[in-house]
Image (cartoon, rainbow, N blue to C red; front, side, top):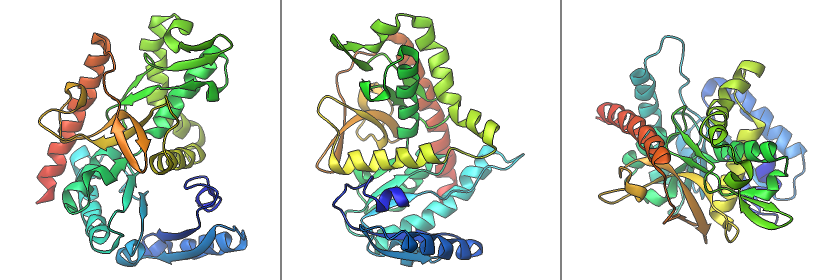
Length: 314
């Protein structure tokens, strides 16, 4: 919340009114969060609404960041988890459709993020599909960080890694197109790394498993890095990506076939550029056979999740 109120998400000149929604048992926590935000005397913060009523929370909002989801518990089958999230996201989709601003832009963070976003899209047909996205920017940032550590350069000198597919252990972190700024100009990261086995092995594994590693160490999910990634996602979506730079976003691919020959009708993470509040999938990248197999595998998992979700929608 402080990142939003300090202008990190929407820019240093954009006033904000923050709406916070939680379940009734957490109402006192919501009130305490509001008190802390008010006590921080943040110049851009023009109001705080706290509520346990989803309709009130969604009233008039221009942007919605969906953090809540039913957590997977020990012994729970995947279908049961998706079924519970279908119920939650159908309710929230209805509230957004009926009460949010007409061009509300939505970022789904709660896992399974891609499928939760798809449920929301299917349950709120009047909301444009292009306005519903899910967070893979955290994975994207992790990929940039791994490349920068490998090459001992600043992370600000690395760009254009890609996260393909699902925000899960099947995601494909792709360093083939990543660019590094050096004293001799921009160079492809793979030419500087020059160890193909690292890019196809340790790099992919580390990015995929980073969240699980953090949970194992601190007994909680990523917090600061996730909040930072959500701010990055919304900031670039609304204010635009720098020229020559793309980012990874989970977006809806329409048409008979999705981009790069991938199945349509999924919320799939692609490389995108953003301008004037609209995202566009980067086209024309050369995809090698190793990448194509990995991209297809994560699409297969998303199709399985989609089928499970659709079986719970009726």
